[in-house]
Amino acid sequence: MVSHADRRSLSRVAAVRRFNRFYTKQIGVLQEGLLRSPFSLTDVRVLYEIAHREKPTAGDLCTELGLDAGYLSRVLSGFERRKFVRRTRSAADGRQSFLSLTPNGRRVFQPLEQRSNKQVAGMLRKLSPGSQGQLVGAMHAIENLLENEKAPETYVLRPHQPGDMGWVVHRHGVLYAQEYGYDERFEALVAKIVAEFVQNFDPKRERCWMAESDGEILGTVFLVKKSKRVCKLRLLLVEPTARGMGIGRRLVAECVRFGGQAGYKKMVLWTQSELGAARHLYKEAGFRVVGQQRHNSWGRRGLVAEIWERKL
Image 1 (tube, rainbow, N blue to C red):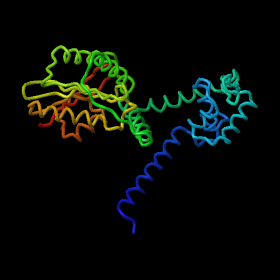
Image 2 (image 1 turned 90 degrees about the horizontal axis):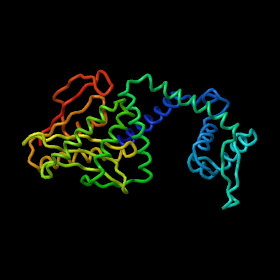
Image 3 (image 1 turned 90 degrees about the vertical axis):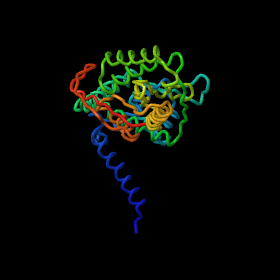
Image 4 (image 1 turned 45 degrees about the vertical axis):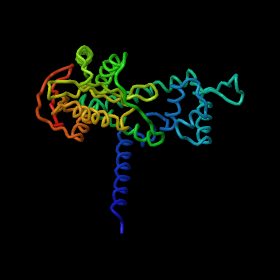
């Protein structure tokens, strides 16, 4: 008899395999020639790594691509015969050779790069800017979760210090432009919020937390005073490379904990309906939607602003 845990495990395996089949079809890797070329997926990946790395060795490619050394050697030998790749012996270690594309190799690779970019851009164009952001965020989460299983990362939460406010404004501007298509007016809004926080900072009833690992900032959140009884969660952000580590959940939890200790009775926040990952965290932490309003802002039309709240 199959146990419940076994059935759940089999279901998850099937879900991963289903996604793999779906995505390989989306990007066309099952075609005889990738990107309408005579090259296989492995061939194109090898050319890509050589084109985008500075003086890679065959060992570097084996490590990055997870290829058998003998198989890679046959691929490289074929490229050398067709004068796509050259080897340059290392002056420091005669046993080692650096790989680079020849002019002929660059001519062959360039249209492959362009077709790949065009293919992905076409896939993204079918989605709204908000859905594009959700897709990219989900991909970051998959990548980060699998990488973190190999090498768990640690981080600390600390209070803000000089230089952090500039980082907060910059990263909000960059990430929201990349993931949701917001223009520089959103960055200006963040700058205004940050300036008001600094100018009116009440250390007894307000906080900014910065998540940091080995000197690198991974995320942030603010808790600010709205009234004597109400506080507001603002500017939650987690770097794409750090998503999946539980940082967002921890930052929201710190806001709830501190808000209760500071004597507030209610916490509110303002967000957009398309920010799926953040909304999930808020719902998980006990917040609920109490208001919605359509608006056109930051170069986007048809946005839906939401007000969430929870008792403390």
